Image 1 (cartoon, helix red, strand yellow):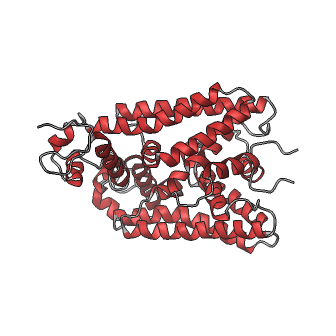
Image 2 (cartoon, each protein chain N blue to C red):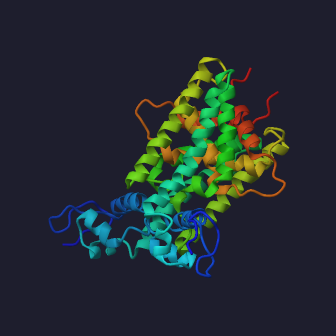
Image 3 (cartoon, rainbow over the protein chains, first blue to last red):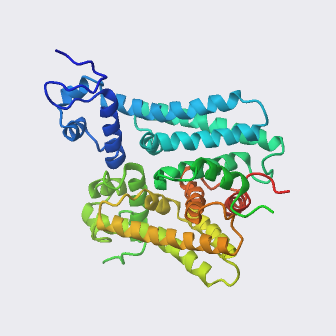
Length: 201
Length: 201
């Protein structure tokens, strides 16, 4: 009897893994030890299965990385596409994008953490960096448009404003850990970013 | 004839290195390949000198790391001490701290980059993380004080405001590269952080 690769059913009496759980453990290891510092051997040991059992699900370590960073990027681009479809001023689309990005970050924290640490030594990493640049361009264009509509302060270069905005958003991977009863972190980020730390009179 | 370790004078006809230039090259390699991924052998090859020539300046790789992260931390704590000595409301001390931290970051970019990537596997790294936490506490205390003085919006947890503020500041290591004729980046960060992206009427 064989087991479909994407179910959690056991294989030969051992606890089984589907691609999703292999991926989650791989991402955890990549984040702890670095992608280069993690071997398929390490992953097999951590999962308590053989390397060939992993290759049953996924052809290579690179492919695990690709699946992981795409999980983060697809979430962010999904929000960007929704934002672009909205009617109304650019500032509202930008705020939608910021709130949605925070939600993706919180929901897919280990995947986004891995994405933001990618440095570009392999094809998969270079592709991920190219998609990140494309996302940054979408943000910068929205900031520039909102500035030309008079809704973003004109005394700062829109490219720098965009960088600082997502510097704030992306910092969540370093310190944010969801807790029960949290106030909405997306709302908090949006308030501080758009309105500033000082009270508005 | 021996050469004092801290001069740039040549040794035996080869271009010489002082501790400072060994440190700068080491930090560059650590940032490119990771601290764990860089051996003293790699550093010797990059410098074009022998390992024993490096040990003439510094006893170990750990000591290079310690010197590097302390360069960053000493800068940040120097600013924090100056900020604490100022008279006036907490919001002014906080703004001084933000502007000063940005200046340290820009001035010591490779050192701060290394500091912010430290993950804590060795004593030197754990010590650096402890000093970072102490610095974060200083920031959080100032934000809380400024909030109690009515100068920071009361609708956000001061600890989170402090995190977002330095998330924005620290993001500079990812994207900021000083250019001739730049407007003052410390001023830009302070404006966006304190006043927000939206224009104030």
